[in-house]
Length: 138
Image 1 (spheres, rainbow, N blue to C red):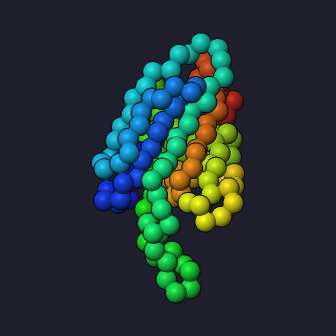
Image 2: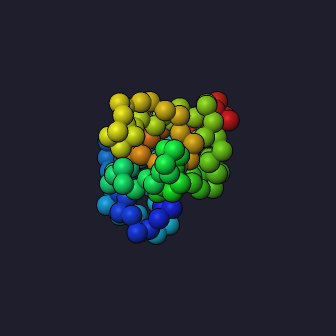
């Protein structure tokens, strides 16, 4: 996980099956998170929740076009050294990104493409054994 601007205190909370795995109120450096997941048969939900961003963290020009913004990127996601980044950004990944444009619009359910630009929740639902899920979704 990384931020495009370490001076802006964007926070993130990561939960697996309703148990917090990692939480910080300020992503101030590129951070790797490692967590073991049981490979027993079952359904799982991994949640990335970004918080702390305000509309002032997005700069727009006189036409409303974004000229600078701060984002959190979720990358280098792997299972047993298999990088899942490309697959997690595909339509088969079951990732959803629910956000409300930092309070400026109604909440929407969006697809996820590797970066979080708004406070919100990215949800990844998968099953274990993970290798079966990988075979079905690659």
